[in-house]
Amino acid sequence: MPDADVLLRLEHVQATYNRAIVALHDVSLTVRRGEILAVLGANGAGKTTTLKSASNLLPAERGQITGGTIVFDGINVVAARPGDLVRRGLAPVLEGRRVFRSLSVEENLVTGAIARDATRAEIATDLARIYDTFPRLREKRRVLAGLTSGGEQQMTAIGRALMARPRLLVLDEPSMGLAPLLVQGIFRALALLNRQEGLSILVSEQNAAVALAHAHRAVVLENGTTVLSGDAAELQRRGDIESFYLGEAAPQAA
Image 1 (cartoon, rainbow, N blue to C red):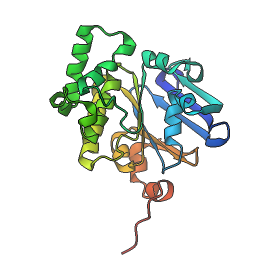
Image 2: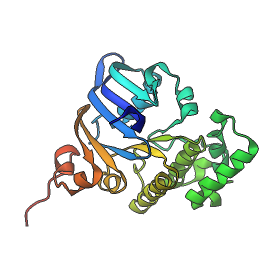
Image 3: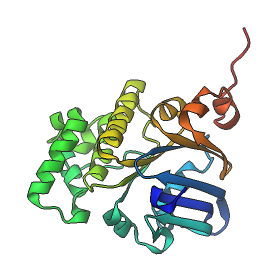
Image 4: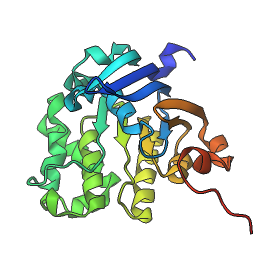
């Protein structure tokens, strides 16, 4: 596909931790402008490492890119500082609902606008947008983030990233530890932002069903290698995705 259509490209990426533990052997993927790409795989497949590589966050965890290339909108990601990537439009949401627990929900959200030197008027506009996207956060805006539920913390973490006005949202395991209804609500909200604003989203998920239901395309990782990619609807129709690649038991015959 023409490079103008591609916002993020990983080609044959290899990565290690502590220069000894190989986490990625050969990962390739592309995120087109205005699409949702799901990264699927079982625990240990390399999903989190792939997303941290795309955001250049591996060095913070003693990780290294040892091969391949990663380019975001023409920028060599490995040579860029994570903060500069955020300012250029790549906003990561890490696994584990990492909020500032001693700050209120609204204070957490406002921190997301700091990277782009937003004015008070811009912050107010963006807060209204986040509260429209996640109405529960409006109700909890004065509550300390550490006292909110897991779902509310996940919405806060996503909302904080959206306050940076990203073009690409890099989202790691948003369904982890959340009830199915909350997960569906979060994915519907993200899909709406994608349709209305053209927000590109790279999301890693172990819940293949919900990810494929909302993504345009998907890639499947196994042991740090891209083993499958294609249209999400086509992959959703395949009956072997979960049993072969996600570590789920195959259905038993009646």
